[in-house]
Length: 269
Image (tube, rainbow, N blue to C red; front, side, top):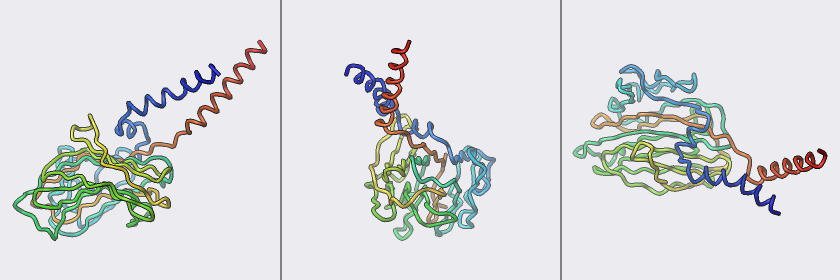
């Protein structure tokens, strides 16, 4: 019995320690980076020509976002979008149907409070899409919306059968957040995280449910409405796949088998 307790402690303690000490950013960095746009291209590079440091796949083109370009300072500048259309750019990833897909969306905004049209609720999103090519079947997304002259809201949006959203987080007309979306495709939940100190600490924006039939096959950047009177800068747009780990029970079984083998070997020596 003592050996069993020791074995459980040896196998479980590292798991518990990792859970309490690791942040969502650590989890992101521990995974396989499947797409990563840092927007450190030369100035005036269109979004469809921006370099993907994780893969050869690039954003596709959408004429609505043709004037959204890099600023030469490591940011994508959305202020060139002077139309009210629903601009979307997609980047392909290999189909992902299990494990965790963690999106990273680093943005800053500064809306002119003297210019606000309630009929034009400016939106900027990062979306996990379940089908490709160019599906509108959303699995989950980081969803910013300008809701008044002085407010922007943030929530995690889940779409499909059995899905649910996270609560609204009310923000000001200007701000800068590192946001992360942790979509667990193995247990059909997702969690929204955000950081106001560049990833030093994170706040959970809540947990939502996913449609069990949906995975991730492409990732979409959305810019909806006219941003020409505003400042909207995207620092990074990336996603990581955290491969499913064996359950604690399975690890313990493996450990017990190994312990038994060691004991048998000891008896024969």
